[in-house]
Each structure stands twice: as C-alpha cells, then as structure tokens.
Image 1 (cartoon, helix red, strand yellow):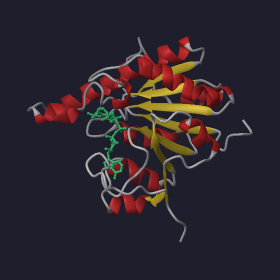
Image 2 (cartoon, protein in one colour):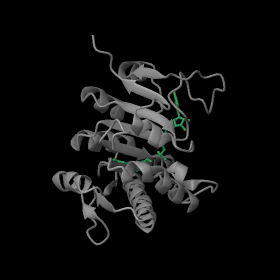
Image 3 (cartoon, protein in one colour):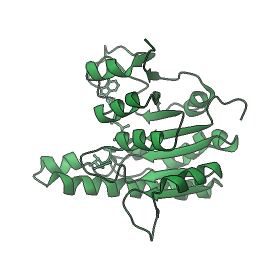
Image 4 (cartoon, protein in one colour):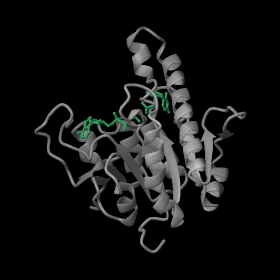
Length: 241
Ligand SMILES: Nc1ncnc2c1ncn2[C@@H]1O[C@H](COP(=O)(O)OP(=O)(O)OP(=O)(O)O)[C@@H](O)[C@H]1O
Ligand SMILES: O=c1ccn([C@@H]2O[C@H](COP(=O)(O)O)[C@@H](O)[C@H]2O)c(=O)[nH]1
C-alpha cells in the first residue's frame, strides 16, 4: 500500500472501450486486460470502486433521436450498464479478484441493491465494488453516477478511464490540433464547455471538492501510476483562492 497515494478510488470505465476491436458489445479481451490493470492496485489493498458506462450497447439519446421516449431509452441505457457490470464481475472473479455488483435499479436476482453503507463495507473488506445502473434515474449519465458514488463513498479521487488521454481545449477526435491540459479547474471545464465529462458530473465534483483525473484506458499501467499519485492524463481540481 505504501507505494500508492490513494486508499480509496472510484474508477469510471468507459462502456465504449469495452468494444475493443468490435463495433458493438464486449470484446472479451478488454475485461481481461482491465482485470490485469487493476490487479496491482487491488492486491496492494487499495479500495477500488468501479462505475461502468453503457455506450458499447445503448445510450438513451440514440433512442430519442429515433423518436423513442427519452426516459424509456435511458432506462435501456442503464440496463446496458448492468450487462457490462456483470461481464466485468465474471472476469474479475475468474481472475481471482473478489468483486460485488450493486445496482441502482433493483434486480435482486442478479445484483445487490445499492445501499451506501453496504457498499462501503464491501470496499473495506477489499472487494472491487461495481456500481451498476448509473444513478438509477433517466436524463443522467454514468459520469454523473460516478461523481455521485465517489462522493457518497468518500473516494479520494474519481478516475475517468476513457478513449482519450486527457482533457483538451476541444474534442481531439474532431480537432487534430487540440491542445491537452495537464491540469485544469472545474470552472474552466464548465465555462469552456469541454465535453470530456458531462457538466452535471463536473459540477457535482466541483461542489464536493472531488478531484478528477482523466486518462487513456488503453495505455498500459496508467491506472497503477495514477493511484501512485502520478498525473497520467489531466487532473481537474479547483485552485484555492
Ligand atoms: N475537450 C475535450 N477533451 C477530451 N475529450 C473530449 C473533449 N470534448 C469531447 N471529448 C470526447 O469525450 C469522449 C469521452 O467522453 P464520453 O462521455 O464520450 O466517453 P466515456 O464516458 O468514456 O464513454 P461511455 O459513455 O461509453 O462510458 C472522448 O472520446 C472525446 O472524443
Ligand atoms: O444515471 C444514469 C446513467 C446512465 N443512463 C443511461 O444509460 C446510458 C449509458 O450510460 P453512458 O454514461 O452514456 O455510458 C446513458 O446514455 C443514458 O441513456 C441514465 O439514464 N442514467
């Protein structure tokens, strides 16, 4: 544990990244690789909570664009995150890592309901604890679910592992000349309308002084280095006045 700066972290895993080389769903190689990324941190006794997205399967906005009721589509999106959470749990357990899934939408036959105190107990016992179904409410995202759970469980930092290696001054996937920030304040992310994380999630972190680190999920060893305290992407925080 002494090599690690943080004792309890919340790792937000991109749903889209689970597709790997596929165009939809879960490439089994990706959860396997993620398990190995998390292992050194887990084995050192760092408490690891996980929130996984659902973009590899479904997003509510897709349905809304095709005329579906937005809340109905969002419910489908939240169920997609449960599928991803169960896939990750299976992989982590097969890799010998203790893991629980807690769902914000009750489905007791397949996952525990989210109960904050029980979640903290799982973490204290060293179990990787995956929070599925986002916030349990439509019109939100799993980034906001991650920010909410990070605050609730008193995580020291929210680590957003995604398809880009940090926060840029514009979307690097659309603008090849975009410039990366090593650090940036929550207010700048919000005022510049940078879309790497949704505004609700960023504001929740700002209001609760929850630091965020954005880094590339595809870069080996990044998570371990991030938990060691290295800035492996972009750190979002508020400067003290
Ligand atoms: N200013 C920016 N800096 C960095 N990335 C940005 C910026 N603006 C937009 N993006 C985009 O944000 C994306 C990451 O956020 P997004 O919410 O789409 O993914 P995710 O939360 O990791 O995935 P999922 O929703 O599947 O869980 C990147 O793929 C990048 O193209
Ligand atoms: O709290 C939440 C979290 C998610 N949703 C819906 O699920 C999809 C998938 O999540 P991503 O964060 O986009 O990966 C999202 O698009 C929403 O439709 C939700 O409604 N509430």
